[in-house]
Image 1 (spheres, rainbow, N blue to C red):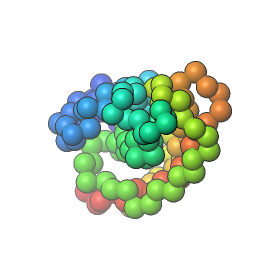
Image 2: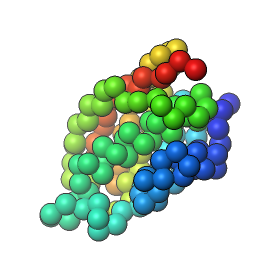
Image 3: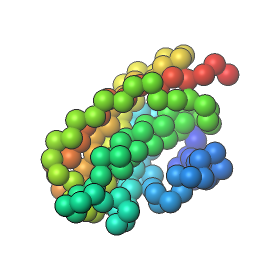
Image 4: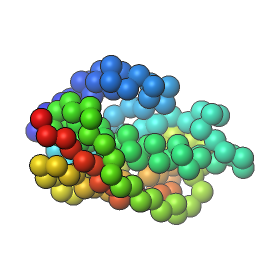
Length: 138
């Protein structure tokens, strides 16, 4: 059972990372090892050519996995990304981005997972990432 609910995670982010509020993300599903995050697209997230920018996709990966970890262990604001490797697989449509993150291993000091990104309404992924977070000792 998750340590934090989606509502608690949204409140935690609003307090700890108010600079992320402009992204308007929404947690659609959460359990001990998975999260589904929706990030609504706006013109500010697009690059020339009408596609979602790489930095927006990387932010989505990082945010989804961070929320998954916080959902599992509780609010540890100082957990940080130590590695993020992303493969861009196809052009993302200028629509909401859906992130499906999985927690593959949770240790005392490191969490490892992967995140697959989709354009809303499309079955094929637009990107896949592996990610590692360092968790500070409490």
